[in-house]
Image (cartoon, rainbow, N blue to C red; front, top):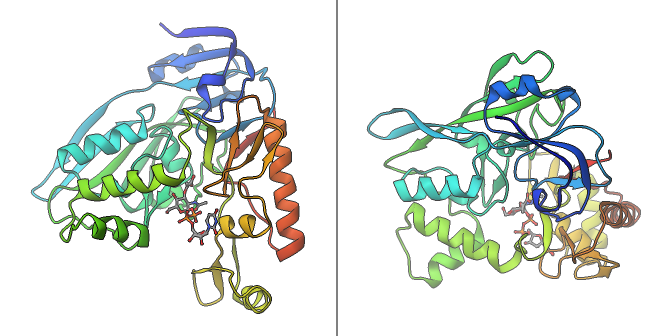
Length: 337
Ligand code: EPU
């Protein structure tokens, strides 16, 4: 039975904890139920609600994805292929893999949200992105309910980017993903300085996937606010990629500015640094603000509205643009109505 609720507050369905109302909310537990949802093409699909900013009440269907299931598709001596339904919780999947000794997503521990949202924005942290282990994504087109399998290449992954966020935005509901993970001879990624520091402090020289997962959890807990305690959606903006020549000009004016290499002509600048340098870090503006430990994270102090958060983000964007000539792009999906 397809469960439907009317005039429901979405406060507990978005990690910002924004109290907006939706006229009809459908709780999807199997794909066949999609045919019972009127105007499903206009629907807003929520998994964990960890990457959306809801700015007003919604007078269109909202689908809460509750498709569940983890299945072993195939395995060899060193590899395993897992098929995971999109409504599973991402972090619980990571914990399942760590417990079973399947390597590849341990650096992506504690990322809030659902499995379906992971390929949508090619989630990444501490040197790993989901595209590194993703075999394919299955999705269903809302208009005609046709199912399609997208190979990793067809997903057009980039930094916090995929085809589902761009050309096919709003057209498909992701139903599941297939991951190829290691059972032995894991390719561990400990390149990130903070991971190395935690391992060194614990005296770990030969890290296991569990050690890395625990290190990542410790790092994230130390600077990223827990959405259950303080509403947020992780990084609000992407780290901007700018021309090297532009960066060199900025560097001569602001010698402390940081960057990561991208290619011969471009560098990535940490948005957190840009925002902090302008004094926004820890600043409280009404019911919202930039987090005191990670400037890139905007938070809801309890009673914020989506509009307030959006206004703060626009003020930050305008300040960074006029100071550094850099246009910050939002990572979060801003939902207008
Ligand atoms: N920084 C500051 N001030 C701040 C925050 C950061 O100066 O308040 C500077 C520091 O120089 C620091 C650098 O920015 O060395 C990088 O900071 P951090 O390691 O915290 O990572 P980030 O670039 O801010 C990105 C991802 C995170 C991911 C981490 C770790 C984006 C938009 N964000 O953040 O992803 O967890 O790297 O890999 O790429 C998310 O997408 O929601 C998210 C949390």
